[in-house]
Length: 112
Image (tube, rainbow, N blue to C red; front, side):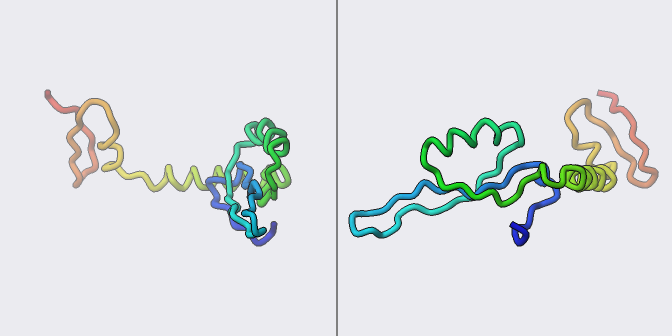
């Protein structure tokens, strides 16, 4: 579990390796495991169903173990994204068209 790396933006989600074992007549394994990402509340709901359907489950990342640390990772990533926004990004947001003077970074409403 310690070798699994999680992106900062997904630190508040469960990362689970799930597999429904399937074999052919000769005993060769046909199924492949996959990593699925679940929200905290979603995982609480889905976990029981997966067990009932005979899925092999391995939790790779549990966000509730170090919740405060994971919350700070997500907040830090969000704040970095806000700080990196430029006036050009603001101009591309939906709404009324705007004229941007890049020399002064002054935003004015268009006359349309």
